[in-house]
Image 1 (cartoon, helix red, strand yellow):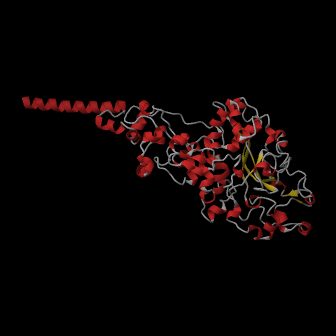
Image 2 (cartoon, one colour):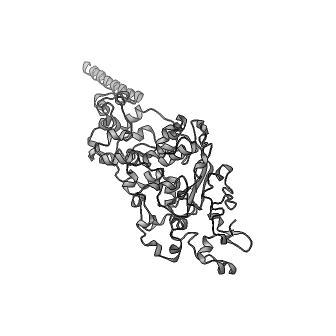
Image 3 (cartoon, helix red, strand yellow):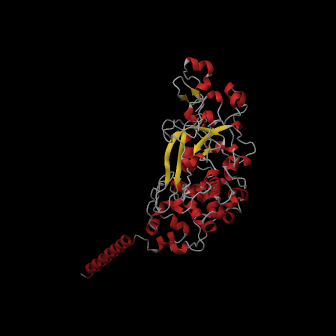
Length: 486
């Protein structure tokens, strides 16, 4: 009798313990026993324990679409952005960076299960933001170049703000911009300008941020995930042939080139000097680096080699948009001239003031492809700043579209012409020169930037505030007289 009673008591006790254990785990969803706690009692232990990361994460709402260039970025949960796992994490563990220890790069406090304590001690989420301290001891030359590079500093954008706002003329004048504008720049423009980690470890912010591959250090960034992630609408989608009516770039389809085949590490990392625009960068690739003796390939090249850049003939329609309204929290922003495909040729902006002094003959063409840019006098009015010196830069900027084909609308010499046209104009003129037709209309006029673009369905003419800004680059009165272009 006593033996049966003892067995019943033991069975009841085991059941109670089992029930309490399950109930406690279900209620707290947080590990409590010493064995499990040991796994989260360190930086690595926490970040390799997916369920624990979910239990202790701080919830976030997905970002809204503020109307910017790329719309709302994809959303990854906070615990997914910092989880160490998978093949990428195994690569990281075997890499020299994985042997340094978390606090070597991130600071903070190791050996604790308390999230607040772990993230104290001058914790830094992205060590490459303080690259002089965290990266330069092993990568001195790269850090010396990148900290002043176009990729990291965005000097082209900053130069536009500095000059158009009337706050100065040189990159060093950016601190003179109003604090409100610098705040807006950080919240909007800077989301696509990258430090080391944002190319080699994490996804670009515009792609959702977070670890791209379990903290693996990716020596050559993935073209689509990283490069196109930032250079999306104006470079990546053109190269991949995403836009309706376009084809992928011939360098992709015929050669399988990625960005790095043309854009060298030295160019991307920077040379430590301040360049006001990427087109002033000495390491920028040129078509003639590969296409040698191109001037003698055919009669068209011989005639026009110094007249315009290669893209004038060999690029397709490309993405344009305009009149950006920079967003602020709670206020909608974005381009008021929506994204659209078109093609424009203008007087080469790099040969006109204020750019001409910085190029010393580089890209010294008479005509060039141009792209409608986002700026407007009231672009920053959500931040209480007006661009009072707006006319100093054109709104159509020098561009080199990454959508090259051998045969485009301008290289098609099979255009059928009327008899009298054929007498006075050779075949190439039928495809590119402006030709006045028998009915008084003009063929090919839509390719050129006039003050009055009546042939452009998106923007029939320049806005009043654009006319003076573009006065040095519109082709009005600057084309051959015999074209009779109006």
